Image (cartoon, rainbow, N blue to C red; front, side, top):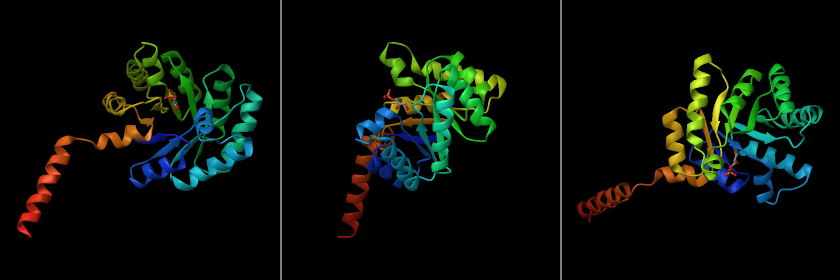
Amino acid sequence: MKFFIDTANLDEIREANDLGILDGVTTNPSLMAKEGITGKENILKHYVDICNIVDGDVSAEVISTDFAGMIKEGEALADLHDNIVVKIPMIKDGIKAIKYFTDKGIKTNCTLVFSPGQALLAAKAGATYLSPFVGRLDDISSDGLSLIAEIRDIYDNYMFETQILAASVRHTMHVIDCAKIGADVMTGPLSSITGLLKHPLTDIGLEKFLADYAKGNS
Ligand code: G3P
């Protein structure tokens, strides 16, 4: 299972990357705005800064909603760095754009996915990654993890190569449940990764080991 971090915060990206287990980064316009990164030039520079920290796929989202605009923007994004993945919304022109980029050998991440039918279309278009939003479905009393399981079944039935990138992951249990279901990738906040470290018995056990070592060496 690949671990991506879902943020545009460079300190958090560095911290996750320093763990040695980070496989990539996802961003979106909201995450950029949260870090105060605004304006086209600043946003493009920020993507390059992220690529210079992490040796893995970095999703950069287009803002256009029409085919021509997505192609122009996506090509400019892909030119920024070899690790850029063009993130495209699940809309009609988005599917056409994914097919276009697939044919050109440019990686894509189909975002804002909330149904198995959408997942099927994105895979048919050849998306590299598919981002179903787990947390946002949970937010409206729908079962985000069930969607991941349904898509896993569909993709396995036909051996689609599109990787299921469980997005809108909010906490450690989302990560663990996505791993049980077989999501190829998860993307979440730093806390959803570092939270996996925590267990009180680990802390108690380590404290005792160190105390016992100290007794024998004092
Ligand atoms: O990758 C999509 C993600 O950023 C959405 O997360 O927490 O805003 O639903 P959230």
